[in-house]
Image 1 (cartoon, rainbow, N blue to C red):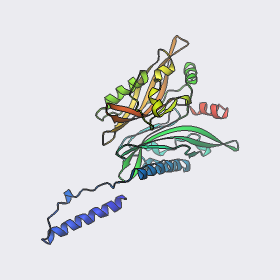
Image 2: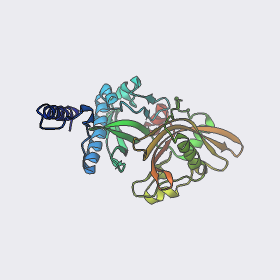
Image 3: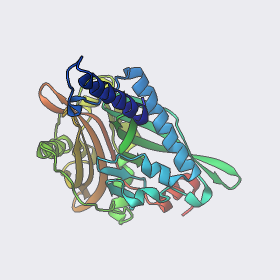
Image 4: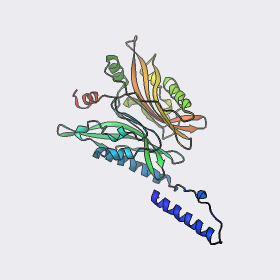
Length: 332
């Protein structure tokens, strides 16, 4: 049901109430007591609508409809959008930068296509989160290169449509390559952003993420759970996700991982939360020197019987466009 249709039904209800009160045959109804109710929609319809919204956003970006993409952001929840490159960060409530051309290789006219879109909904149907390994297609020397871009997104329901709150796109890089790039100084730090954590319980989530990356943290068990770490070898789903080694352990002995910047939101029902963060992993190189590896992380949490638990986690290193070109095309 559209907003216009809902408004018409409300007007009819108010008119009927006033008529009943004026003819002496019915009780007078206070218009303030007439509540507008959101229509109940089956979960399969909600999931289908979310899939369609994701594909529509891909089309907006492919066609250059950046203002339409910005209009698809939540008007109420502050957004956090991470691209592949270190400087591609946009945060805030429908920020102006969300309406600019942020695409990789934008001068070549890239096309974003869905490859394996996976959709999940909260129990109340108010929050949805997705994962897709996009086929990011770029014309190059008379041919078309297909770049595998991992994309996770989180949406909330805005009455009769899904609106985007969090997006994280990344290109997978192995832990060995990250160590080498960091040691040579070729790995750029992700762009900083202002932290935002006003929701009650935000401190609990910050603490949880710290424990998760430096030891053990509560990862949910179930078929829909997904953990994406910087390299392609650690894309783990389902029951295996809870057995994934911590980020500190995967980087090697002596590594510590900390949060640098964070944006936290909690859904209206209080059963789902999310976080977008800049991380820093302090690793040992050549058994002596220590270097910092800047990372990005996005998380979806669900409140379980024992408290918050992670149902989706996406950790990545920001890759400069030049480094991506070297890996994909063999050019600097």
